[in-house]
Amino acid sequence: MQCRTHIAFGIAASTALVHTGDLKVLLTTIAGATIGSIISDLDSYNSEISQILNKITAIIVATVLVSLGISYIFKIDIIDKIVQYKNAANILIGVLVFLLVSILGSYTKHRTFMHSIPCVLMYFVILSTFLSQSFTLPFVVSMVAHIALDLFNHIGVVLFCPISEKRICFDLCDSDGIVNSILFYVSVFIAAYMVTFVV
Image 1 (spheres, rainbow, N blue to C red):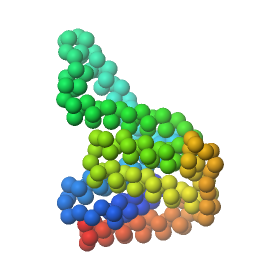
Image 2 (image 1 turned 90 degrees about the vertical axis):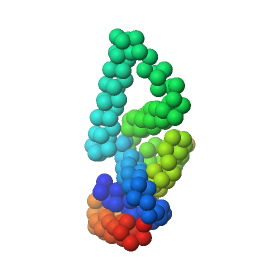
Image 3 (image 1 turned 120 degrees about the horizontal axis):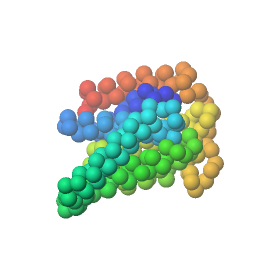
Image 4 (image 1 turned 180 degrees about the horizontal axis):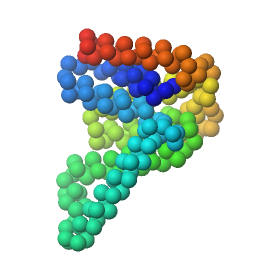
């Protein structure tokens, strides 16, 4: 399916599961759902999320190099400053592991590891160690929704990669055909309804 359909479907599924009147929780839910709904396509070199990851990785590498340079020149142990605060250290470790899995996943074949249940479980464990449930649950729900939608088109997914290389495919529709358009508009309607009248 197209990127916009995955995002709309993920937000619709997540807001249907997470009922809240709290605006902060709602925004966190939508953020988690948006990222979770497109992260599986990191393994597609032409995808928007893959290009974004490349930019984020470059920024992080530049930041680490600048930090090491400042530490060396001014004799300030920046790493030590971060580690002395346990929560900051946990967040830093979590972010780095998240990025590591994402970067490694971006080099796998399309619709293999990044579209698998083991990958979903890895992200769940990583995110649940340093982020709130209001972000983690929508992220995971949207990632699962993305994988489920991709099962219906002609390519399918390797659902249990790397345990099994068997590709599962229901072969019911094209990724950019009429079914994609219908799913997009229905998902937008459901998400808008959930945000406006239920949440």
